Length: 137
Image (cartoon, rainbow, N blue to C red; front, side, top):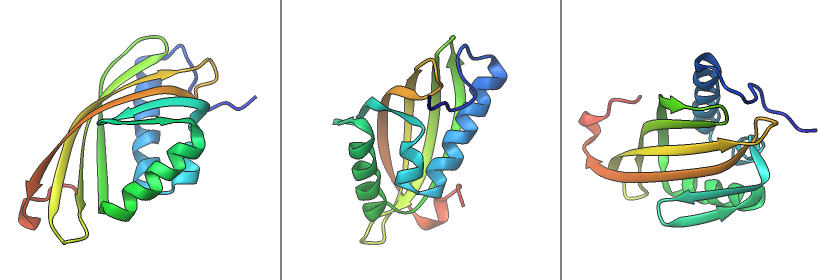
């Protein structure tokens, strides 16, 4: 059985650890590695895009980082229950034209009994910034 520790039920320390592991993984920008934290039938809503399963996760993230250059993410604990975690996040990126953005959002995560994320719902808004306004370097 595949497992990703910590596994539910989550304590506060477990939830914070899970969030840090997710932040570290996403900042690696390695879609294949990142996809292993999700169940094989994981369901996502990312803005208005719906993603299902690991293969689509890899495709989605590959495309994301072909278009969102110099990506840097910071996640923050918001709340948790026994198998769910809510986070707020912000990330910065540069588009292919050289313009900088900061994206703000919230994610709701649900995990299976093995600690794999089976649902990820993300609401995200982008703000155009100047390079001088960057805070995540």
